[in-house]
Image (cartoon, rainbow, N blue to C red; front, top):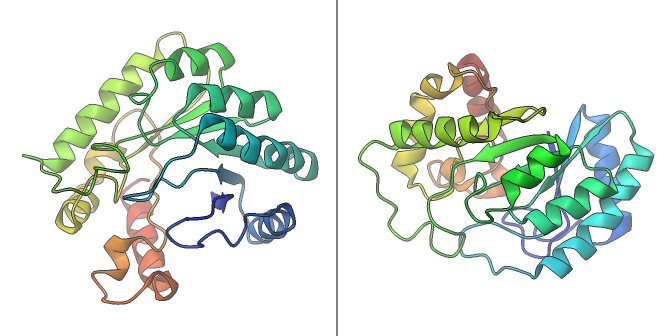
Length: 234
């Protein structure tokens, strides 16, 4: 999965793909490098991020999705949103997957919409909201709580659903550095379930803070954790 942010405040690329020309150039690079899925996001969900309206999100996403579907018909286009209205606009535009950081908890219309259209759905765990999730998150057992949330929500959605459900533990979303590495260490407790697991850790703070560096220098750490995740069944 390659990431295409059409935002002005992404934690890593900082809006460098915000205009259409840059979007298409980056998409071409992702496909050339082997991406079979391009995930388009129009609202930053990094800790402390300021939200945008659904109208702005739709206006940013729909033209990009339409163009990507036309240019890359063999690539699955995913849209990163927790809003059902944005998801529906994206699906109508041609998106075949919705990537929801809230696992359907921020917008109660998300699950009915996903069932209606039958598109693939990435169900992620988040504790709190982007504005609050890193304000002293606490767990008795982070892996057990994340696993129970993911399996429970997936079971709820699976009834009458024809698409594929993909679980995402949500590294960095409402979790401390210690929580993230405990979750990574016990990842197999989640990957041994009946649903495939997606791990999104590219250049995240759990890597560069541990290495005392920055996102630009976090590629090797990303590669190491990606390999570990694959070995755990992700």
